[in-house]
Length: 329
Image (cartoon, rainbow, N blue to C red; front, top):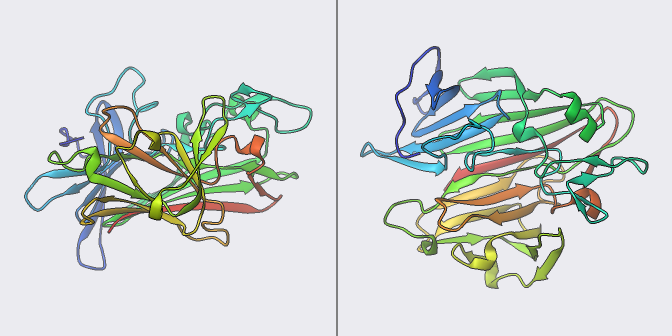
């Protein structure tokens, strides 16, 4: 993102934090869209709660007046606006990965008698949300279900996304509430686009990834997973070509870290809260050649979760939660 464009201040909510630093939330005009901006200590967060519950950008305001992006967002948009952008943190629901049924992609069977379409990464990232609450610390938004989405996911439910912004971290909670009489399968996730390299004097080879996972796979275009040996001490260089489209599961710790090779700076991605925290957590790694970002994606389970029977089931009148924390350490 580099630098903020000119903004138009419409409304401000402010509160003093524990350390005396002010927390601000305001409404701004950015790239032709009305979005929200939060300032929490040195961090600035830009989000559009109504558009896919999307966090666009997280950047740090450095002491020398410069800006350092943590979450990448492009300088300009195409005709699709905020949707379909390679940037931000898209919400992946109800299934994080691509679904296959009998070798046919983008299909799944919610029952033995039915076969329906399911877009790659689900439909939440392209959906509209209704804001349930919003303040200086973040927001809570609920998915607005359309007839098309009900055909793809024919259940009675409420899906909620909660963002909580802190000075050097953020928490994202995905919550599924079953309001029907039958169990509901889901396997959601997040698709964060981390700004890599972190600085202009660095390259991709200066960054490493620590994923403490027993299993590592290479994702194939037909949906198959080709098993490969995990790296020594679970450490991977981001410039390794075979790291792209890799899947890691059976983690021994519910977190992973992106860091500089010299260990000076780290970004930690962790699953927090809940009785099953980390027990089925998967990480997916992806980027494009010469892209200014690298995606390290926390998912509830590997791709094609309905076909692989790795979904989590939510019983009638119950709720399930998947909460991820991203922090600078």
